[in-house]
Length: 237
Ligand code: IPE
Ligand code: IPE
Ligand code: MG
Image (cartoon, rainbow, N blue to C red):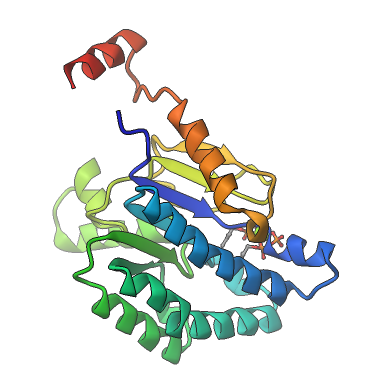
């Protein structure tokens, strides 16, 4: 049986504390975190993950001090031009989830370019969550449903989310010690397995990721059914 999760989502937390512990500016933590994200994506796709969703900036993070946000935007600029390209060249599709309308115009242009260029890529998909909030995503989907005039079903609402058309996350990892969801994929996470790591994201190595995968492989997912029902279904496969 294939125990590699199809869709892994990561709350990449702990950049600031990683920097603080080293007496470095927070921005250095974000830079190291971004480097780690690109390398970790390479690794995740190499081991067979098909969809990787990374939480890079939440809606709520937009209220951080201007200096920190400007630093993050500079990093996004640089990374979309250089590092994200590495993923594109490997046949990975890039999708941005979140409200990009609040981002600087030049970053929106870079995002649109990466998305358009990688549209036909099929080796894997990376969803980069930027100015993303799950409540805002659900409200947007509901408003679209209301505008269509048709009642929604669980499936049709799911299709209206930023992740529409993609499988729900099988595994959600949060680094950086906190044990909370922080407005991430609330609808999609209904049956995700959760994994919390004390490691700050810049130190979340490929080996730490593999530990999360091994933990996932040992979980029993029941989706509300009994063990006996699940075992019968597994026998049939
Ligand atoms: C996560 O790291 C990255 C972003 C939210 C942009 P933090 O910046 O939240 O790092 P900590 O939690 O302060 O350590
Ligand atoms: C969640 O981290 C958002 C990202 C990792 C992008 P936060 O640092 O914003 O979460 P809280 O504020 O500790 O809940
Ligand atoms: Mg944090």
